[in-house]
Length: 479
Image 1 (cartoon, rainbow, N blue to C red):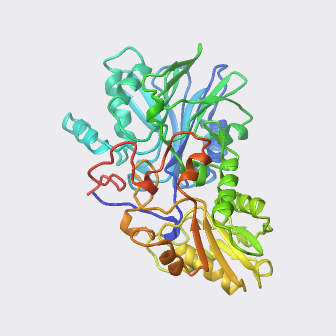
Image 2: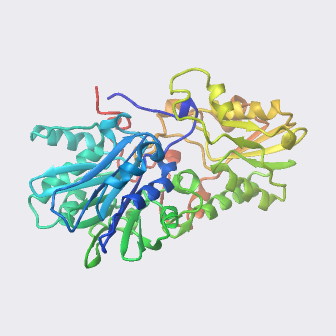
Image 3: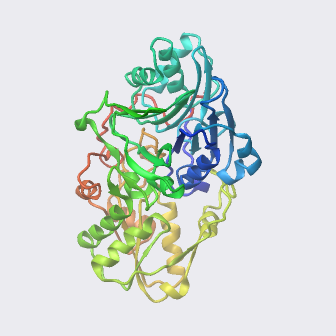
């Protein structure tokens, strides 16, 4: 299986796989423009492609209007395109590929036309048993149009729908077969369905605006469209929204199996989101406070590497009493393909994105907070940039433990051999990146960050809540 480990412009940035958004307006109003703004709020979860699929519950069954494309939301959707997407029920998706190559065929939502009607599906996560399920379907005659595991889910739901009376029953039967991480938003001709895997790896919540219901990855998207947060979809729960309201099926809910992705709190989610009752901003502030308690250092200023390091840096400052300062100016307008993965000039990629404020760091002892170190190349360059700007000392603090193991649940953490922490001590890593000192967040602090909620720490501990696959599923299915 070909691996597809794409880091932003060849740097060390990690990526979430995607974000989902679904809406059903019971009064019959068009939802496409609202879904667009919801996806815009979720853009941080995926920048490679996006799509919207809508249908009219008052119109003929089987008619789905869709618009999908490669690029950001404001590149793919125009006012003219949105105007053509007529319908009061629909789903949207933003994608970053961790399984399945970055091509137009792999954009979501997936729209299936089958014997029982139509299905539009958006998926966040990775299945660990997708290859086996895919082979099973292929031997039964299935012809695949994509290389993503989301199509495997869609096929199984469609197949089960032919055996049962309702779409939600079909989703329930499919959930018995699929294993791994998935938050699903599905629209059938008259229903909007949301489903979350038994571990609750990925977030999914319910919102309401006037007489419309929303399912989305993060609460920040609800705030953007002026919707009210109703509640989170529970791990292992299926929610069905139709003209009669919300119906819940807790068919696979087992609190002992829950394992939320801790990196939602550390990095992925927007800081203004709340994930299963825990505020992301609070978690990052707390991580910074813990770093100050557990790994103090004498310094003049504390700075964060934008954007995810900023809140943790503020927490470090609050706990230590060392002044918080802004040391980096971030260029928000760098094109995603300005320097493509695999090209040289890694230095250029980082320097184009970040510039150091010389007057803020010159002659200072600096504590620099970042969310993670993957391969170490970016950290090394940023440390060098601070020194070139006149920093006397650079002390690096990381608001997560060291990455030691790959992730199979929708995060593009590469194989162990590519991780700087693999077979290196903290002191050795410190020397590689050129810092004066280095400390990571302690493992026991992770549960505290999530207010005691059950979490997945596999990328740090190697203890996978679901058995990892025997074959590498993080690349594409193409040979």
